[in-house]
Length: 241
Ligand SMILES: [Zn+2]
Image 1 (cartoon, protein in one colour):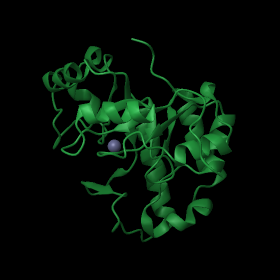
Image 2 (cartoon, rainbow, N blue to C red; image 1 turned 90 degrees about the vertical axis):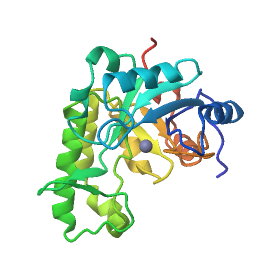
Image 3 (cartoon, helix red, strand yellow; image 1 turned 90 degrees about the horizontal axis):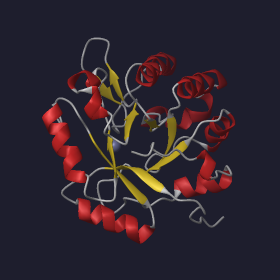
Image 4 (cartoon, rainbow, N blue to C red; image 1 turned 30 degrees about the vertical axis):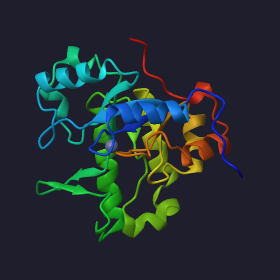
């Protein structure tokens, strides 16, 4: 099935600027591909945005460009470092659940290729607990990389994402009107999840999680939009500011 761009306005809300992608380049790729660009940056320890002053500078630096301005927190507790009024100036907050807190401290980055999973069920229980935390405790508009599984268990996708687990995620997202990212890198979530989420009344976003010329280059997202019959009404958009 050839994949066509949907007939409705499209946005890529998951673009990171980098030495390989300047704001000018991101804007120009968006224009060329007719996709609205949304920029995200990580706040917190180890990243550039740690204080209100940093966040102010980030927002002001992007404001003159035709892009949406977002933040992609990684660690739970991140929002305590920023004033609410400043966070309200952002168009959105996007967060994934891929950096699992370890029981003994530190984190497990489950997107890394060498992630080990000793016990699938134990892993899923921990993962679900963290997803619950991400979806319930702090500001969030978009749940990124939903249902991603680490490499050693990726092939068990259908078996591990049970009806019960999927329903729990949908329930939590619906309670706070959190949109579901259709992720271009990992090709998640799958078609069944998207159909279930649509039925639950959830909205969707497309995300390339790119730091280069892949920004606004959507294939999986368009394919899923076509297969699942997504319309403009199914797509999330920031509140007008
Ligand atoms: Zn990202």
